[in-house]
Amino acid sequence: ALEAEARAGASPAARLSLWASWVRQAGEAGARYSSKGGHGCTFAEAVRQSCALEEAVQRCLQPPLDPSHQPQLEALFVALMPNMASGDAARMLASNVGQISRALVDESADVVLAAKRVVFSVIGTLKAESPSTEAWLPKLQELDRQAAERVARLRELEATGNDTAKLRERTRFSLELLRLCESKLDMVSKPLPSTSTSGGESSGEAASAAAEAAERLRE
Image (cartoon, rainbow, N blue to C red; front, side, top):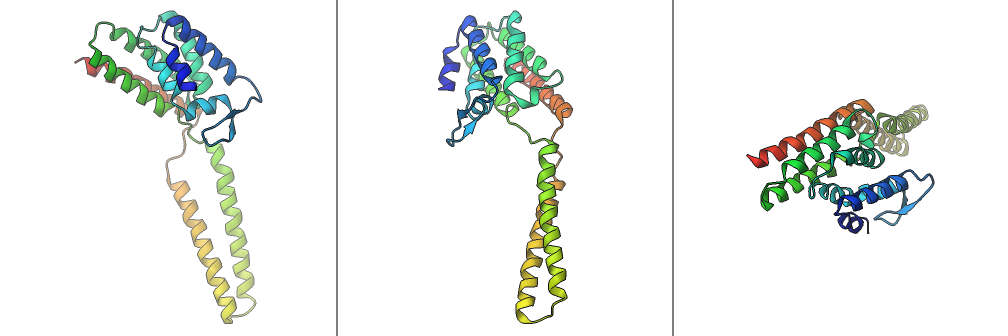
């Protein structure tokens, strides 16, 4: 349904109406929508789980995006894409979409189609929500809590004897402790998720990459 809405917004007026509606729905506190899995989610989450935003931005390429409509597109990105909430990433992306659209005015259908695919791919990548560092902390704390429980239990078992049953239980808790340590090591050894600032920078770089890719298509 969301993809169909996006595809229907072909004219500049229809695009502006659609963007305003989506921004309004994204800002409605407490509103719940059905996700692909049948679970409740926010409107922004429902959009990100679909290809509606990619479809909507593709429609900006033909007819070309009016420069006066760039603020509305920027507001759409901020409302629906978590990595666009701070910095200049949303403005840069909206500006680059406009530049691409105007560069395609006299291009062949093949070049326009290729540019649409580039834009579709870039938007699909940027809309993915990266977990914040704050989201990791509860997971790390839970791993620490479970590990502390295993360590305490192992110390209790060591103090109660070495019969076969106790040794078997100690082996089980040791293996569980090892798995918890491996899980924590795997989590902390990966690059930290982007903070709001670095996320904006990476989003801006991807936005610039969209313009560069479109320029290469014309060569």
